[in-house]
Length: 101
Length: 208
Image (tube, rainbow over all chains, first blue to last red):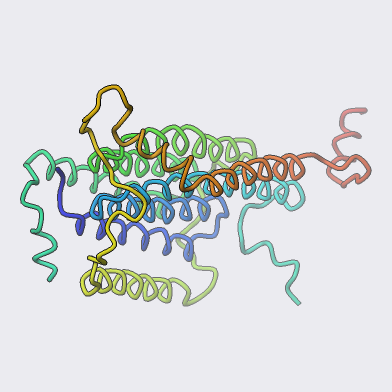
């Protein structure tokens, strides 16, 4: 048996916050994607922790779906990054301002 | 209430505490590395560190199958895809992250982070976690094998639920993956009719 679930939930909250700050502060699109992965992982950790606390396998099943959606999101997102890099030769989010008036 | 929650588990042994502390240090170092490293390759490797730490915590919480999937899918596929794109585009250089392009954004981001963390922890402390609805889907039978002839344990339970309760969602993820693959192929291929300036330059260089 492991530690109380509150430790895991606190750790997941901290990791989620770090990911959110990275998403807001960083400019590189690739690193912004990695920060989204951090936030998804924090949510996964929360799901597994609640699954153990409530003794319900449903939380782990949800983690499985989150993994699949994260994989699909990364594939499409990186495809967009590569396509955009071909046109503009940049991965900096601030340079994508062609819709600015 | 928080004290009661933190000390609620009486069965935690010293190895459990050590494993959790070590994993937490690894996870937090990796997460901070992703946010603070100026080189995208270093950020991707820090992300691997975090993912391994989370996988260890999955094992610690008896989610063995998910720990294996976490390492295979995340560290094996997603981070490799990140590294491939970084190397493919040639953006594996250190960038300047000390300058702040949008003045006042970083302080606002830190305020937002404090609000997020504070409200998450406040929610965890004050919420009534015991809903009375235990085992909506099904119990985790863990490593208890009552009937040796029938498969049991956490992967068997998870598979059973995925193919019964969550069958529709499972089929939907299959469709989602196909759509993602088709979308990636469509994004990656160049339309043959459109010639960009870059292509013309390359062709003239080749013919010269």
